[in-house]
Length: 245
Image 1 (cartoon, helix red, strand yellow):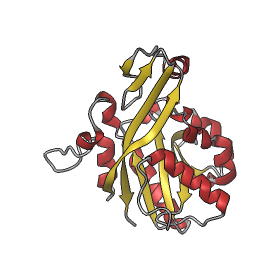
Image 2 (image 1 turned 135 degrees about the vertical axis):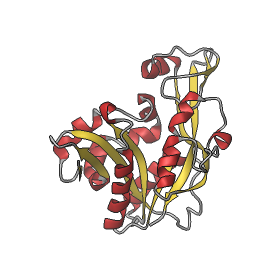
Image 3 (image 1 turned 120 degrees about the horizontal axis):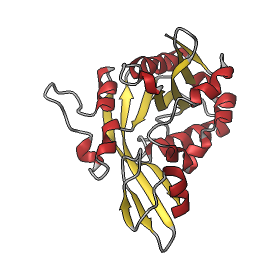
Image 4 (image 1 turned 135 degrees about the horizontal axis):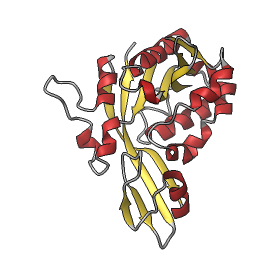
C-alpha cells in the first residue's frame, strides 16, 4: 500500500469519492457539507486529500482534511458546532488570507472490502505526517463515533466516556484515535446540523419521516420531524479530539 495526495494524482478523484461516505449521504446535504466540494478540494486543499492505493494502484481509502487557524483571538475554544464550524473556519481563513497552523480531519473512508483491516490507522498517521510536513502544529478531529449508530437516542456525553475493561474507549473509532495518542477534549453537541423538507429526507435516506423522532440509516442521532410544517431537523453530536505532535 502507498498513500498519495490529490495534488499529485487528480486523476484519482472520482475513484476515491466512489469508495462511499461517512454514515450516509445526508451528511453532505448541510450547508457545511456543501462547501467541501471536490472542485474546492482540487483548487484549495488538494495536498490534504489523501488516497491509499493497493498494489494494483487502485484506491482503497481516502482521508480528507482542511487547514485552519486555531487557537486565535477570535477562536479561544474548539467550537460546539464541531465539523460544521471547522469547515467554516477553513473557508474564512482562505478568504481572509490567514495562515493556518492546524489541520482538521473531516473524514476517513475505507473501501467496503477493506473495512475491519485496520486501514484507518495508517490514514490517520498519514494526516499527522502531512500536517507536520506542511508546517502545521496540531491535528484536531471532530470524531463521529462509529458505534453510536446503534444507539441514536443515547446522549453523546454518556456514550463517549464508556471504557472497556482494559481502560480504552469502548467505541472502536474513538479507540483508534486514542491508540494513536489522541486525547479527548470535549463533546461538541451541534457538530452537524441539517434541515430539510420531508421529501428531502426521503430522497437522502429513503425514510418517510413521521412526527417526532425518526431513526435513519447512517444516523447517530434521530431526525426530529414536524409533518405539518414539512420540516425535518437532524443534529448530531461529535467528540473533539486532538492528536499531539
